[in-house]
Image 1 (cartoon, helix red, strand yellow):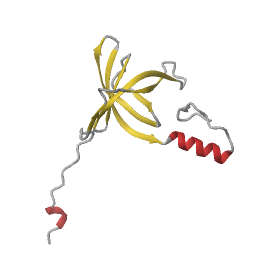
Image 2 (cartoon, helix red, strand yellow):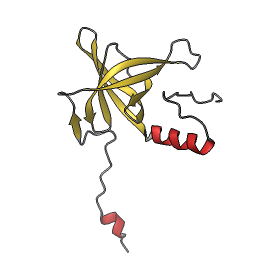
Image 3 (cartoon, one colour):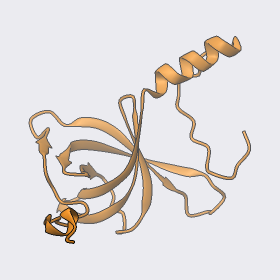
Image 4 (tube, helix red, strand yellow):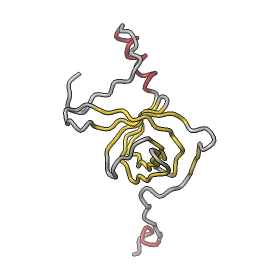
Length: 138
């Protein structure tokens, strides 16, 4: 007796294969890269950047300083927090570096969530998004 599944031809998905691409070349959008500081105390360093677009699961950014491949980072853009790592970084011009960031996770609606939490707990809504490193107590 042959299995129906053995007759099907499944192709293995290619991880991080570019599919849909978007570009904001005519109007880049401001974003902020957050990377761990060199001190190793859990603090994060902010790097202003511009959001240039997407290619599949990768964000394309431009910043004023380079980051090494495999650097873990987070990116704040509008009401979203992207978590990922640097896949490529290349100089485009003096003090302009184009980075490809592989996105591992996206957190959305952060301001709405903070406002709901504050309303339920009777607190004022904090304006800046404060990121707390894993393992640190609030």
